Length: 410
Image (cartoon, rainbow, N blue to C red):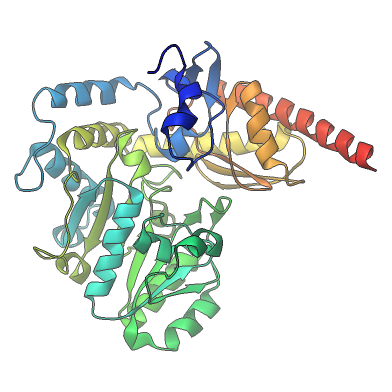
């Protein structure tokens, strides 16, 4: 580091201006709390955007990673290693849920991020020989070029056009529109992409029954159902995979974020014909299946069992109740488990996120009127109580400032 400048001071001189300049430099964390360079402690209700599933410095992850790095750090996919096979087997077990035939027909491809997992799914769709892919408007699947083409947000796509061709968009949750879109050319429709809950748009769950209807539509026309569980998966919503809430079985599932508990790892899981399309030479990755990242994932999967997931559902319900009861200016609390969207009366979410840091609280605003809470899955009830109190104080303060500014302008 140059001279005596802090990392925060050095940031704009070293980093591309992709994210703007952060407000805070974090130096340590434990559980659902983090500490900045001045010694201030925050309750982390974002978890690195739904990544730190077991919080910060969880002993199971620390032990697994520390042990693995002393043995093998990286081997590439030219060689086998035990951690990647173990995690693959465990993901298949969680996906198949005691269905032996389903497990036997399921395979996993490991990569480094959610965008890469969705790029893999995109390629699987292309390998069907069909040319059309249908994705949800306002969905988010990543920022690499293929994943960006699946992301139904024109403002994110615009600077990078032309997009990869062949993707059309349907209104999220509108099965009638989607059916009409499919029936325009079902023989050339390869896949339907969706998120069970749209996270980056404002924590918007799919309407009840939508996933089942999509599954039926795909079955009718031989289309692959591809579910993006990058943000919703690995227990986040109270089910291990959010699609399990409706009892459906997708053809392809993508995941990342919480899988590594803070280390970079993504995965694309497929079964049946979809699992057979990738053959040698069709795809690849240097770092995917890295033993250290897989050791972390193995630790995460060991902790997040069925009982743990049930606890997440209970904790999420309690968090939503606390917000509804105690936080002013809230129109709606939506989501499932510990993926919570707080809809505000006014478009002040960005201001709330900024001011919340002064109250020792980390949040996110995916849209002007929505706050997103995706805390570590190990967040305690005490942490939630304190976070809700700090959120209420923050919103009250921001509203007062906004109201005063409006009166001044008037």
